[in-house]
Image (cartoon, rainbow, N blue to C red; front, side, top):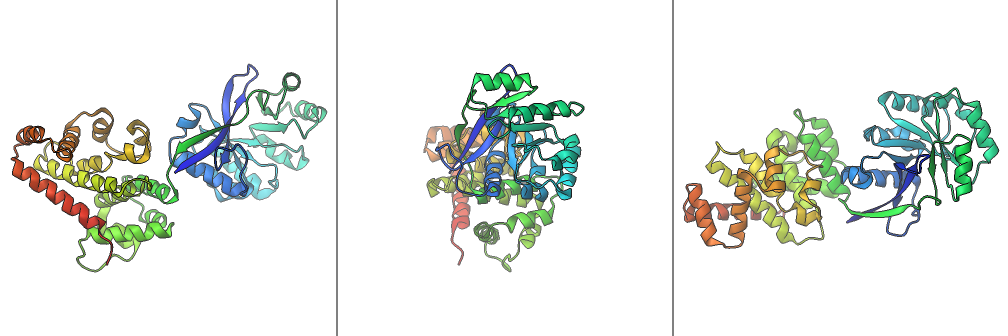
Amino acid sequence: MYSFVARQPILNRQQQPVAYELLFRQGLENVFPDISPEQATNKLIAEQFLAQPIEHLIGDYPCFINFPESLLLQGLADSLPTEKVVVEILETAIPDAPLLSKVKEMKQKGYRIALDDFTLDPLWQPFLPYIDIIKFDWRTSTQEDIRQFIESHSHLKLQYLAEKVEDRAEFEAAMAMGCHFFQGYFFSRPEVVQQKTLNASQLTLMRLLREVNKEESDFDRIESLLSSDVSLSYKLLRYVNNMRYGAGKPITSFRQAAVFLGNRELRRFVSLVTTTSVGEDKSPELYHMCLVRARFCELLSLQRPQWTNPSEAFLCGLFSLLETLLEQSFEHLLQDVPVSEAIVQALVHNRGELAFYLAFIRDYEAANWPRIAKRAEKMGLNEAEVARLYLEANQWANLLSQPEK
């Protein structure tokens, strides 16, 4: 699955980039899709902020994002990093008391706020002390109106952005009247960027992964996340029940599942489902390999508990094929997942005891018996014991993959 976004640079008076405006797209065609502004903003944030680090799209620059009034009041912007986002209030917003209260709240939190396609409506006057940037549409406002507004508001710490600037004459006129930033076809058209991404269920899983890796898990938040997607909910409950090996009363609620597993096993469970849910166009064999590797690495770790943490070994094996599943490098992927330094060293740099376990399982997959014998000897195992561990890992993976009866 891929995401598409158009980014258009915002330049300073020296025509150097200082930020990007991000515009949602549904494909490589550089036009706004036939969806509501609310849908566009929701999708843009989900795909560009939750599925991968935003730095891969905009580098160290901040980005301007359009927010319909309804999403602002719902608090959607509050979840984004203050240092990376300039919140654009659309010209369709109504400058009323609830919106002003929200703007004040966001300003206190450190967000930079812009008024997009500013209409010069005097009803916006109470907002101006809390606004950082005003964007003037060079096609809809007259130059005289813009000049008068800038002159009459020199007492405020406002910065001005001229958008839809299409030639040098307009650029020079905007500079002359005091604009600080510029955007338009004269400088650059929006560029569509295509990136590999995660679908909606997988995004929920990434949120879960972050939640369960906190020092103290919030079971209310976990239950809410697990409840947010019907297909995901069914799959999660099926996996929990399968992990109990069919014994006892089936798990029937998300809170029951979370409490039953406990923090450590809950982290493993969410990591497991995350891995088996990405890259849906990939072969099921890859998922099976992830499970086998996870359990095999854990079993190897249990042979030398003084060397590594079995839970870390499990997670390392589970994530060992993410590069293939998501077609992205481990350096990129691990920025989104809170894993230990030992796992990073193994997956990114091929160093450490966990890297040795991964090499062991790769040799077994390739039937490289001479190397298997050497590795087994190093761990104080014989080949029969290694074969037993690998068989146990396969049986465990097969059990998890069985359909619910």
